[in-house]
Image 1 (cartoon, protein in one colour):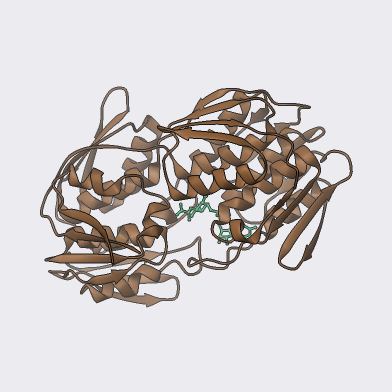
Image 2 (image 1 turned 180 degrees about the horizontal axis):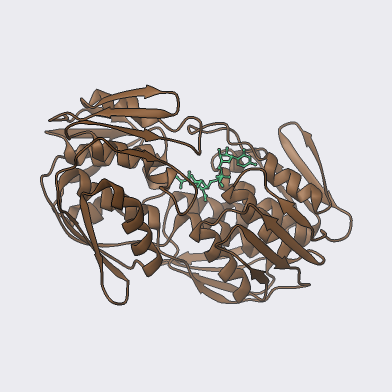
Length: 422
Ligand code: EPZ
């Protein structure tokens, strides 16, 4: 199994190309099942989660060619509408093929996604919404089998809890449903807008994406098109937190206005970073202006709040400082797997229910640590950059799910980092 060894640095300096968004690419790839003609999607990051979604599409007889960030897909009528446990258990986002298969082919058999390191992560909101649109489900031997008599019917759906995945599955189901689907209490994440913009390019009629009320007018058919995936705002936020932890001056390239404004907003309460975008908004300079003063409280929230996907990285970047701060995780019930590993590096962290209390320390120390999930692994990289000495991170396959060429990007900013396997 691969490991990464990283040495502490005092200063990060350099330019970093931000890759395309994992959390936009995955639903867009899943939505290719709705379209009979060839689609060409660019700025797709070369990540293990993306490779995995492509594997699932190929198991459903799609022809997929993925090279140099460009993904060409031609989907075909699958000979078998069952997606195996083997494929689904490894990636929860596989569940995003349910809506497309049901609305396009009237049948789908998908293994229920197992829990994962960040909680049980049920799919009840996806199922109840699709049932309301006319799908009938039975759960047997860990599989959920859905079927539809005729076409799904558009209707009004109010999500009892904001869910990115459920919003995406309903949007995709609504594109080929009969009549209009209205989603209330919809998630507003930019990745949902990216998916909607892609589908509208393919002839769908989706309005209100980016707000809590989304309307989809069902069509009989969608057409082939080209589309470029938005940049990854969580990767960009991760690098900003590297600067917060270590100091320095990074220039992120291939970003966009929305990401620049979003990062400025969420990092403002920390009063440590200056973020300056260029006129076209595709470059963002990040500098550390003050020493981090603790005594702040940050709570994770749905977009446009502080993203849960940056919570682990934020905690790592706050470990070396003075004073006491509190981070509250409101989205997932168990997203603190990184805390015990950070403690092993000398961080002073206490968990109280859904809160982590951070008592800043002067120094943290390199150690051998274990990654447990995607964002926990990037928090350990940040801690390794901040630590005295060397840190070795085990199970870096977690990192490869969501960060493209991370070692190379950090090496170009003066970091001594290497990957090896034992
Ligand atoms: C998406 O996951 C992202 N993944 C996650 O990013 C992200 O953390 C999450 O949204 C929240 O922003 C992708 O986009 C591929 P949810 P998703 O449905 O859709 C509960 C990363 O690190 N819920 O918005 O699975 C759920 O348990 C990953 O890149 C139900 O109760 O998240 C959670 O508490 C991790 N019933 C909350 O809603 C349901 O049917 C939000 O989950 C569905 C969800």
